[in-house]
Image 1: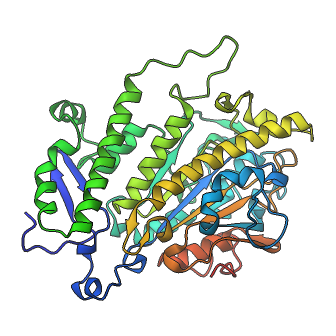
Image 2 (image 1 turned 30 degrees about the horizontal axis):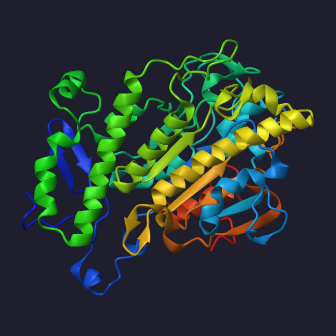
Image 3 (image 1 turned 45 degrees about the horizontal axis):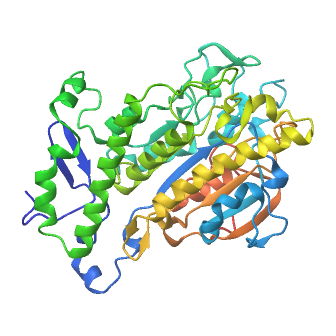
Length: 449
């Protein structure tokens, strides 16, 4: 199949009802580039992800005390990212003004999620006449999404199918997604790893015969091994190793998904509340989704993703870190030290999952660099302190180096009321989807290079 054919970013392995995209290989670069030894991150596409955490942050344990290079001793919440000190920056002072009431009264959680990527004021309604704005991820998807198999990937951890009023007169759609294709069209998140896997690797993800096909094949890889063996015979040694690592990773993920689906629900101690919407082990499920996101970027199935670690206003309990109370109720901490300690544990748990994702991305080699080098991952919330429900001085991290366009390893303080959407404009510019404005932006965010 491959002899005499040039390898490109669109080359795929094919099998029964399955297409498996390839990772970035040196064989995809022009021969002159490889011969010159310049098979670096500049030859790979840039990727962009937005990861959202709800209910604000314990800001004193999140924000470095001084500007400039990140200290050796990071704040407690950021300690899991210590191995990536040179791969991320803390951006202080950014504001999501349209998450504020601006005359609309209560509803900070719904407005926060809605405004995070749009920079637009949500229409206060619990009916079907919802309105926000086009989100940054969907702005990019509309312009560069045709370059990949999936224009964008919307992930989440908390399954929620509510309708009607979810927050002080705001429809549930506002607090349960980040992505808005149009001002009236929010995109639902996918919380089931099996469905994400099928969407990434099924040739016909909506085919009603999918179950029958699953029964006919023992795994996704079994149906593409012939193509894979042929390809391994014609690429160089480094590419063969990279391809072998990649195919092994896909099989491991598929096996873990199947294993998690076959296990009985965890029996919790009497009186302990089960995490909402998910009966699997919370940490395992987080990591499965992180693996799938990394795989989607590695294969160039998509270059754009959003990932809600939980819906805004979520009251999930984090028993896995010893916190039995709901997240939302704890976020109204009233400066109670016990509550703040538990909030810190939840915040740190989330950052630990982020560190796991970073490790997955950094472990994937691309040219002379790695996949994390070619990513821009924005992590944070449109609420600062959960008790005050403020929407200024937000907890924002920017991870990855954007293909060499971002200088990481710093704490940058921006002037008060700098729009968060200025960061999105800067990321869009680096993705090759520039715009003069987005929501309430006032220009490209400076000082990232």
